[in-house]
Length: 113
Picture: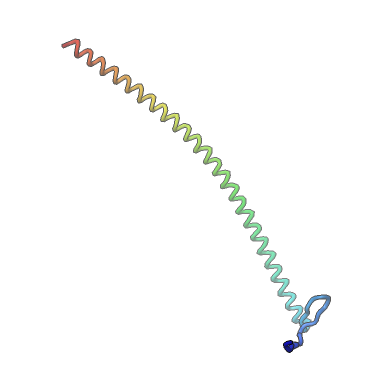
């Protein structure tokens, strides 16, 4: 069995908690420091919570804008299809008219000859 070495502890135990052997002023100062850190932490947490809420609001706004843009894009695509279809039918009509006109011209040239 290995020999053991015991060290004396510089802390006392009070109700299950270790308390350093310090004078009351240093404990008070440490307590004040911890309270200041806690206040800072709470303030930081509140700032972060506020920033998170603002970010979530911007996200909601962006999502709504995206939905509006998608809707507008869909409307524009439908309008573009209608215009393309209309243009196609107009080209078809003009092609038929041109074809008929050429046939009439050819008949007229043949009848004069």
